[in-house]
Length: 473
Image 1 (tube, rainbow, N blue to C red):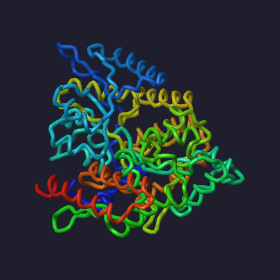
Image 2 (image 1 turned 120 degrees about the horizontal axis):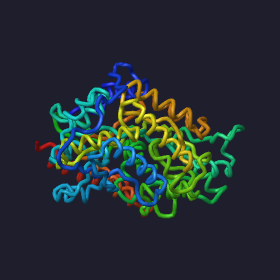
Image 3 (image 1 turned 30 degrees about the horizontal axis):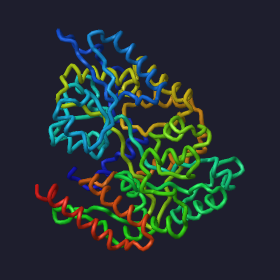
Image 4 (image 1 turned 30 degrees about the vertical axis):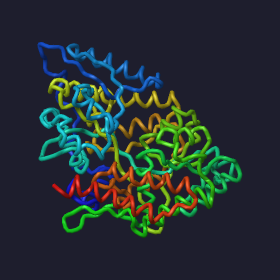
């Protein structure tokens, strides 16, 4: 995007999402039934199918498929679990092997659009009346030249996940059993040390294996006052070696060498292993978000009542939660009929911006499945603004709530403050994360690592990428 982060925030994403601004068009009905008839059978390749280990989730999708086929007999549904990966995406797209619908990250749409890998779905959205039910800034992230190429699955804001059992063992809960979580990054170091000393478990799991390391680290850097990228004189400039970012990276180094509160080898920790560490009690804290509460619980068997999600700590530069989410996008080779079928399937899942009987049934099915699998049923971070849809979501959450919301309320309260939410850095984001992860790996494996020198190198590398990929245009 050509706009700065601050300008994006000023568009009102945070207020409109979390105060449920009523300016959006209500979409009580999708206005359409089955996709338009065709003489040729339509194949819907569902790249959003659950992974094989989530057997109950698969049963849920199979039930949705039965419901879908009853209403859409001319559509063949083909399960196709797909995990977006930057190193394999292009080859899959160019060979025509992308599923009809798939999930990616909000850092990716503009690259996928420019590459011609995803389909313009503007006409299909307009036909359903969904084009104006999307949060304006998210809509911009998924659009180019007035055309829309995707829709949001959801949004998230990073917080701090807490293993309540370990906080209990360390004596870090109040009279009501609510965790006494750290409010600042300095407090986090002390809290982590207390937990390590009293339980033997790591205080916190920090990632340093792949790009997720740099992704998590961004919120910490912002809290120390760092601005990792800036636009100056019309060009994008890397700022990874600023004094503020040097201080933030030095803090991470201290977590390893001064406080000794990390898991055994952070360079082996990725997004999935972090949740495993938290869920199994190997670590007491981990950076995570509302959209991934199934990972420590359902996937790694932490009791649903022993997980808390609290705000990220504040630093000398403030408190920031990286805001992002997961969009659905569609293969450029998909036909209009296939796109319409995918959108109709999302309605049956309860993931469309409508409050039809089918959509509400999908929401309830999902909530029941969460309860059955010990997954917290908590409010979403919605990326749609249709009031009837949001009301239906809220009613389902209240009906099926299975957690003590005192473990979550502070998180939701702080992300309602628009100034605390921070979009990901806008240019060559994954390249930036990769450079930051290299530095994390160095400082967490070498006690004598020179933080400034490492960040100087990372900054030079990122600037070369910005100059070749962004500034030359």
